[in-house]
Length: 457
Image 1 (cartoon, rainbow, N blue to C red):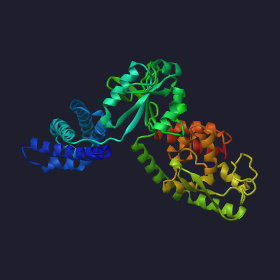
Image 2 (image 1 turned 135 degrees about the vertical axis):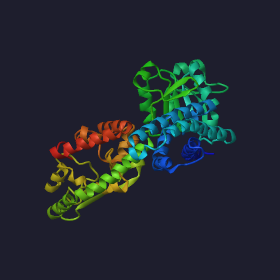
Image 3 (image 1 turned 180 degrees about the vertical axis):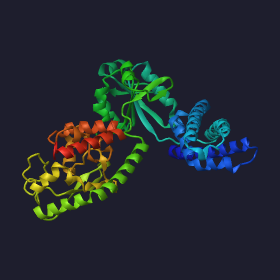
Image 4 (image 1 turned 90 degrees about the vertical axis):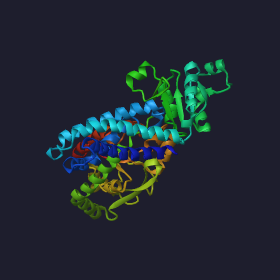
């Protein structure tokens, strides 16, 4: 069975067994009966209770098979998740109101033990009679000491999870010369300066850094390299432990991921919900402003009122961006594609007002509603400039891992005249640290920019 199918099956079976276990607890509590007075409150709360227990399972890794390899690991995770689910369910009943007071508290106590048995038992039986097919992960270990070989051996021992150790990378040329390039199990593939080419040639998915080399240099060389996208983990020294958290363990060796995925799935879903609701509301509320702006452009500069231009979005996919036209027609006829400047002579009088207060960006609410953009994210650029920036600016491709936005950290933190390199730093800061409070703060700062006209584009 493929890993994704196992995870989906785990969620479905957990949801089923949580409710079966609670119903069985009602039967045990009331001697084989289901009195409506006590059972009806459960039916009303069943969806919420199910989500609570599934969330507990997610927190304690029940949907990450690699964290529950052995029966004892399964049992520990189930006990922890059921304990959390039971505590949250008890709190839910306390705050749910008088209509739910008849939900028997003794049922919660009984179900605590029933769920620990059922959720553990089905997993142990399934893992015994079935196997999971893992996607192959090719990895290299950066290091040439005993710990490097130990890490390589531990990953090799976990080959059933799809790990394939290609070999080791010496931290420098001197270490490579000292250990040589031949090994019966884990060959020394080269020195650190060869890492980028080795990753590209061997299609490496993961790099584990053991030697205490400059991690910053590694990130700039590899993690942001356009040739590949790999996961980078380090065996942390005290400094890394002080500034970060351990993400996983290989045997008793801690690993810290420094190229973690940008956001969890729930954040993507929540942000999309905010985008849909917000764009719909604003299109209705701001419809008079949209109408006045369209008329102002039409009367001052003629048609068309909307400026439609192809931009590059998430995963480098092109889309048509909508704006109110703020420049003269055929503004690039003589110059070809060029970036607008603060005192650009091509901008019309009405266009300058629209740009000052960001009214020209309002038609992008349609782009947000269509799912091509978000309220907050890196600003979308034209393919002509994207191609140039990807070629000239290391790591520029990285910003396209998320949706572009109407506004972003670069727009509220930097001036319009700031360089693409500096904008990229703001975009990467946002991409790797984004959360809903940060989005809200950027939107508030955008309102300040709009109302004051600061940094007008």
